[in-house]
Figure: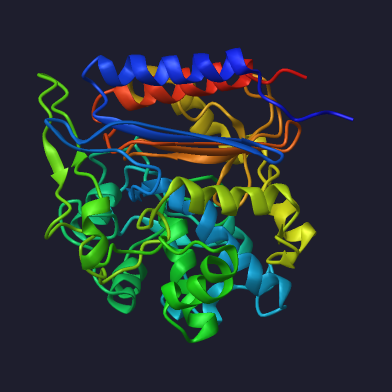
Length: 407
């Protein structure tokens, strides 16, 4: 019987690495949680702002960015468990804006150079990020990527995202980049999933999340904005200048993007949360869908979400970007596989073993669980990926965390 312990020396090294990054002046503050079995350790260090301010605390609220994606997927799994959705149902019944798609003849084609889609978009396509549209960072400057940015279809670039029905209308005006099911593409599918859940249930996406996930899991500080009375728990979010390293504020807490409910509740990147709330969520996944004796998701639903769902062909472009653009990705994305809303490691490329699942966020967040070691790691900062500092911190955190396992 494994004891599921960390070594004391290993935990000291984790702390030392975090301290080193904060003391370098490049990371204003960090809150990290490591959990294994019944054992949980939290480190909070540094300050809420680059120039000082209040100290980081265990209950500091963070903009979770793309680490929202694994949580959004669970909302859809609730509906699959209840047979209100089926994996291979066409989505047209709920998302009529996506019926009768046209597909670009090639990624850089004019928007009217299209062929008919070979088949309808299915629930499975949306869950696996293969429905045909996404953030393709290898195709910036193409007509389709320009149209996605100009239409406000992605967060705050450069146009704010409109409310869900208008967002769907604009999405429906665009051709797909690839045939449904053909290729993994980033981000837009997770936002689309939130709209799908809201339409299937007839409730706002946040309401459904709160009732079926956040309340049962005790995730009291998780949502799409920070209430006025709690705004002092939200740090500034920085996106440093890549050239000079100057700490530019991308979002202020007071009056900022998360100080009020958004027009569009973004399943792809809109959540705010804390280390303990996210620990409850990932621990539930490790427990096969159960939290403190209450079943949140079925075991098969969790297994589907957290194991690879894609073929080598579907992920070829993603793998190529991760391996050939390490100067841009900072080595992120080399997991091999993708489940529903999260990466799954299918080969051993670093210190983390095959089977680890989770995701990282562009705001400086990293959230993974590892079934083989019964481990959860959550690393939260508020430093954008405009510079490599937050990514370097993530790599160092995971490398030292895996050394702290001492069975």
